[in-house]
Amino acid sequence: MAQNQFEIRDGSKQFDARITVQNCEGDTCSGEGVVELINKKSKKVFQTLRSDDLYFYLNKNQKPSVNVIQLYNEQSPLIFDDFNFDGTEDIAVRNGNQSGYGGPSYDIYVYNSTRKQFVPSEELTALAYENLGMFQTDHKRKRIITFAKDGCCWHITTEYAVIPKKGLQKVYEFKEDAMDGEYVTVTTRNLINNKWTSRSKKYKIKDYYKD
Image (cartoon, rainbow, N blue to C red; front, side, top):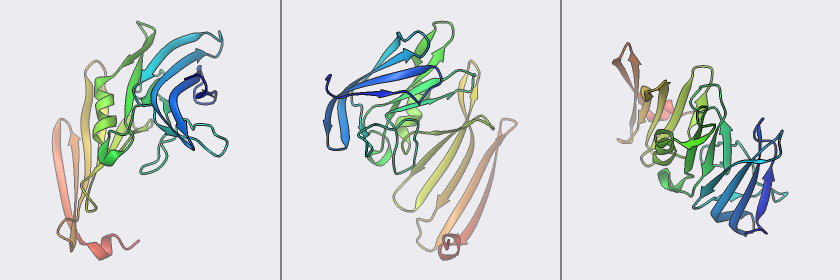
């Protein structure tokens, strides 16, 4: 595996990353992978994470990207971010293409300040497998945002809040249903004071999607 090794130095303030992956052919790497997180200050390996299928693309310089999340497009092998909004950096490691429509899937690790290491998050990992690729984070509103669809004509955006010591809570849905071919029904649901409010409106498809 040594010949397929890459270093990422610009993804995190605290860590450099050394990626070793089983197979690289052309601009695509895949297969078993090892991610070594190296402390920028001490230059020592802080923690080693593994992936059954560390799938990613190489750029024109034959290097992997980092921290890129593009719906239906590039998604990096490693994503550093504060996914649970607790003030510490977490990490997502690409593991195959098991999300919706064969999209990228990720194992999510959150930093545990007591254990002083990254630990797997089942809840966040599930979001990164069950939707269209990696979720997005809105740090200003402290929301996690997922996207899903059913064919060409049914799309849903869902937002979650992170409740300390409890986990995720769904708080918002925005659904576009154009399955009947002529109209699109747009439904917005909000969780306010632990009660869901819902509002729907119907548009002609040709007017709604004219842009």
